[in-house]
Image 1 (tube, rainbow, N blue to C red):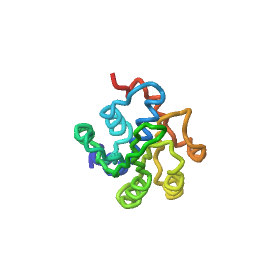
Image 2: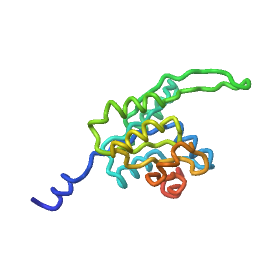
Image 3: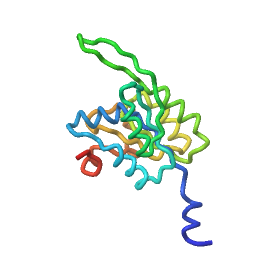
Image 4: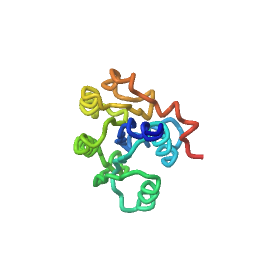
Length: 171
């Protein structure tokens, strides 16, 4: 058996589960814009992901964005959004937490390791479960200065998007 064949057999199946709003807003809060194509390439090159699920609120007027994200390689999982007013400004809410956890569990037996992209403490139970089952590869946290303290015990598995700014920013 050739060396290349042995490497393919050893390679683990890795899925990424991405909270798009946490990723996007976390990066924007630092004054830069993420290039989603470069981020997908980073996940592919660095971790050899088989699938990248991107959880995102659905807004009809964003069809071009969704087509672009699919072309980048993401599998989009949509959440219906809600419009509401806050301080006389129109806001749109599309919280994807439940969908991300659900899809991680639906796919649990299909992957060897998972990458969770979020700094949101609502994912503590998922991250903890994956860690206990030896299925957590990485947590990729968008903003090093603003993430949930609940994730602190998993920082040895963390990568901060801040440290990847030069590789991943949109030019």
